[in-house]
Image 1 (tube, rainbow, N blue to C red):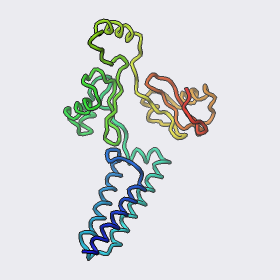
Image 2: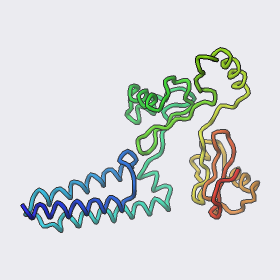
Image 3: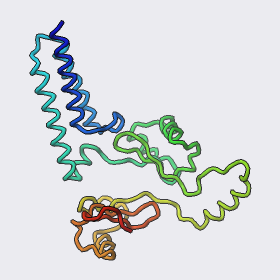
Image 4: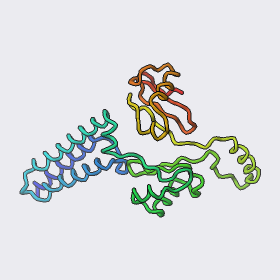
Length: 239
């Protein structure tokens, strides 16, 4: 009994230490491979506690090995965008310009009830309010709404409706932010989808007196189509 108690305390402390070293994240924010590693660690820690005939080292070595694998994969992801795409995948657009993309729903194995539930949980009850709905890599949904989607108060609803409709005619519909350069490397996939090329991105950077693509941490267009970039030596984004 005393041996089981000592093993439990030791393995509990080891698992807490390993989870802390893996990085501070909530369970809902874990990437798929991180979630798998977390489950494997819990199972490996349980084996020596359940069976005292197993040497404690048989639980410690696999746990430390998984921590080492997680650290190596994280370092590879920091340096390689392709590695991030393989390990984490890419965000998927489920709603585009207020219309549901059924092919994307089928691919992600999400039904309409689940999608509408996510929309309501985000605080939206009208599908027409949403310009884009994106399924992120960690399984959470993010939404980009139209600029004129805020609900009117009951006291001044009629007057505000005519004013908002006039303002909306001159407004440009928001668009998805597009990242063209990340960590000094051009994202050819987004250039192709945006019908742009390398010459275009270099011209945009030269307009802002940026000569080397390797100096750029991130270059993108925001929801209004404005070109934003940040250099390695900068502390904030520039327009």
